[in-house]
Image 1 (cartoon, rainbow, N blue to C red):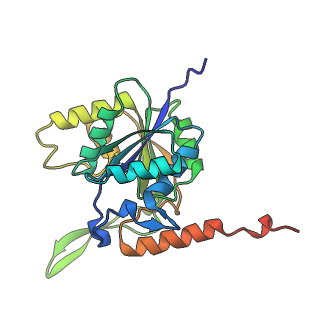
Image 2 (tube, rainbow, N blue to C red):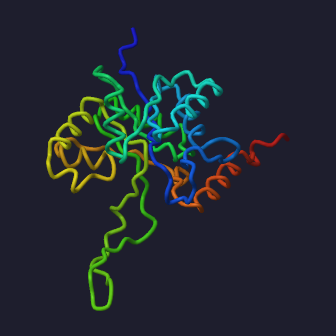
Image 3 (cartoon, rainbow, N blue to C red):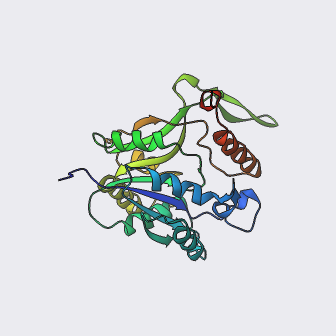
Length: 250
């Protein structure tokens, strides 16, 4: 008998893409011949570690996602439900859609279409012994803390780059852990006024004794947020499709 926990990929696609300057939700914009969300669906569909996929989609566009799922044969998709007005609200709706049976939950930004299968493998492997996992890469930039000064902002501090990481997704948890963190957050009257920007932030604030293990991410695992990101993603897909010298026939 297979005693391992099932692993569920949750695609968070509830945004409207205001920063990208288009009326269509950015997850439905085509890159490399497919909607962005379909690239993300394909990665989770093809990952042997993933048993099920749940999609949280912008209200009013769930039928469009179901069309993509049916046409593409993404049979791991069990639910396509409407997302919320914020990242934390969408995650909470996703947790409600997952039921109560313990599982591994991999929460992924649907607009990170270049996720590498290696990252999914390492995240699920890490969840065998840990209950919270985040994907991150070292910061290549020096990060400054801005402070108010005469006539504008000044540098208040320069952070130690050697310990800084840039967070990516998926962010991965045992279902019971992320659900408890959100239950505590939503019971806190101060949470709405100071919401977390991601799911690890909720766990860190409300379950501080739960260590969040880091798995190496990738520079290619970009989030499509601005118009320039569309061009970068298109180029990265082209590079991925180009055979290397070692792949050429001799």
